[in-house]
Amino acid sequence: LYRQFPAMAPNASSPDWPELEGEVEFQPGKGRSAGVQSSFQLIALAVTSAMAVVSGLIVGVILKWCTFLGQPVGDRLFEDSPLWTLSELEKQKSSASRMEGSRAPLLGSLGRGDIRLQELKSS
Image 1 (cartoon, rainbow, N blue to C red):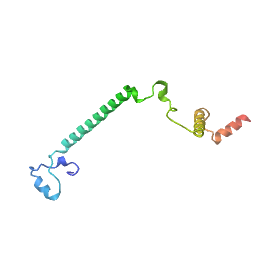
Image 2 (image 1 turned 90 degrees about the horizontal axis):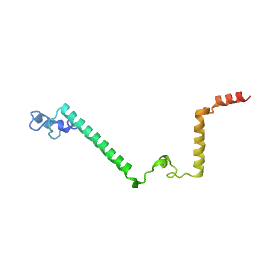
Image 3 (image 1 turned 45 degrees about the vertical axis):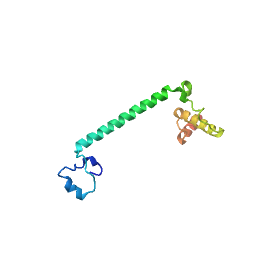
């Protein structure tokens, strides 16, 4: 326990220190109880979380207000084509899969059952 949380080790002036000094090699601590140590850890967690939120807000404000960073605006915000270069073969594959995916909710999958159903309807 004292290796993991050295501040919980007894003080050098504590009556428990001479007993522990011979058994385990570690430095005297601050003599914190488990409750005090947990409060320090909760405070550290809160400070870390607050720093993460504040630094995220600062970066967000910088990215939002600094237009010289080249951020896309308006209609270009969701347009990937200026940033992606695809070969013609990849474009054809992409458009074919996009078309197939767009019909899927309307027609269902073209499994064996659907083909048989279409054959029955056409005959």
